[in-house]
Image (cartoon, rainbow, N blue to C red; front, side, top):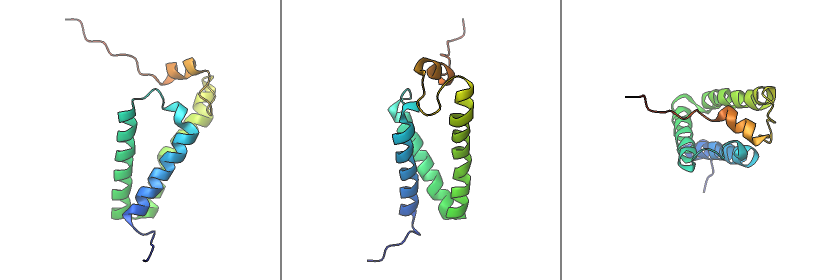
Length: 110
């Protein structure tokens, strides 16, 4: 059997490995989100990455993947600490949740 990294399966592995490491290191930042939404995010990002990798090449797909990773690094290293939240531990938890939670939308009065 011949092993090759030039397959769509390797692209799936890359994305799921990045998500696994991210979940282990930063999962506390997503605990407030519903599990179905987190699973949908994994599926959509994996599908988009594999499609882009096959259409434009893995180098282009990885370069474009660096954009949201750089954004996440900015949020964790600059924005959260600037708002009094530890970018590694999401503490104090109540302040973190206040920053990232969307306000509840209420229906317009009739």
